[in-house]
Image (cartoon, rainbow, N blue to C red; front, side, top):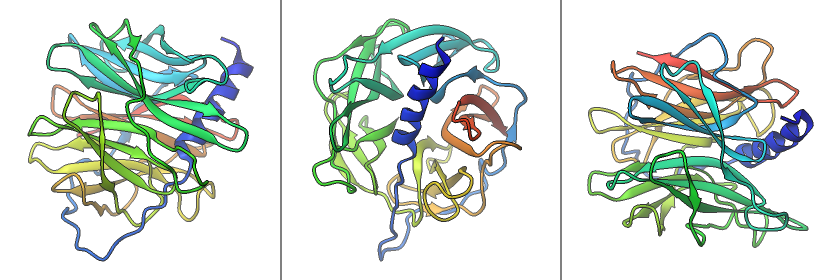
Length: 307
């Protein structure tokens, strides 16, 4: 792979992924409560994926299948132990220059009831004075062969530049009533949307309130029905100091209370931890895949475990 091209691609993804989401607390009581589950994480040795970032990992026939952003588009890799991955290759490629999908990044995977899969992913269009970000989709019967679906799945306006579309870094979860909820970033706010047709059409639900910078959302529903939202942040303002993972708790998946402390910080010699991607293992523990880089902005995907 051309290293120079990959650096440019990953830097573009990083700008998309870590554009600040400042979420302000409104005057209402939180419906969530802090829980001790998934507080402590232990980093696993080694690198899961070199030259990649922003993963979404699922299980297909007891095999880990990871979708992630790298040079040329969205890639897939497979593993039988969750630690050593074999790269499959690009499964959703970037579009033509100037198109709404000239860069494709940040996949989220929906397992459909008919045994197929829908991928919601971000498509970026570079314009003269802004970069529009929309969400598109692809379908696969087996999780490896993907076909882009026509149309835009969802778009929302950002708060930074007038008229700029900023719908970024999606993550989805099935609700008990059969609907889908999507968490996404929209520039200076974070929001949720709902779908009642397996992710084909989406309606905005509302904005989230976390009271601090919060980007790269990843949602987990625990055994007791409560929710844990993982995200990355900085100590003060966007881009100042190191980037790390925090979490928040909720009983309804909409109103969250910030958990105390940091879940995961950069390793020695590194600056940024991005894009948490949490999966539950067969023994009940959880593994977090995450992007990590130093000042060179070349990302690898690493992992950590929480019992």
